[in-house]
Amino acid sequence: MPKAKADSKPAESRLKRKGAGAGRKQTKKAAKDPNKPKRPPSAFFVFMSDFREQYKKDHPNNKSVATVGKACGEKWQSLSEEEKAPYVARALKKKEEYEVTIQAYNKKLEGKDEEDGSDKSKSEVNDEDEDEEDEDDEEDED
Image 1 (cartoon, one colour):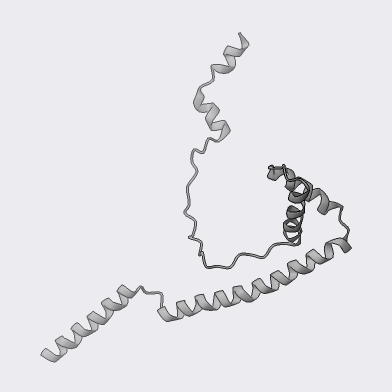
Image 2 (tube, one colour):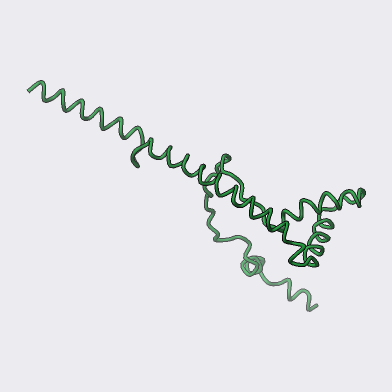
């Protein structure tokens, strides 16, 4: 019988307690630019790419991504700073390459912005041009 007491609570109060998404505002994310360069991998991810290949060779029947990730994490934790050094160096090299490409990308974006010249849309600029022409025509008639 005590179980019936617990079920006697209205479903609404249980939903409110669990926070069933009520009252959340949905915000639109800015569209991602597909041309933007990807961020460089960290030293761990550089290590993981090498480790993943080796692990697949050693364990060809393993299909679990979680198992590979767990083994990689354990191996990374067990490495000394000297053993991690080549991966850190490769990650730094990739980071430097990324910084060069992102600067070029940002300059390219700035170039597009400068072509526009202002915050006004092209239609607003065209409207102003037409207004100026209309005013010139009216002055000629006077």
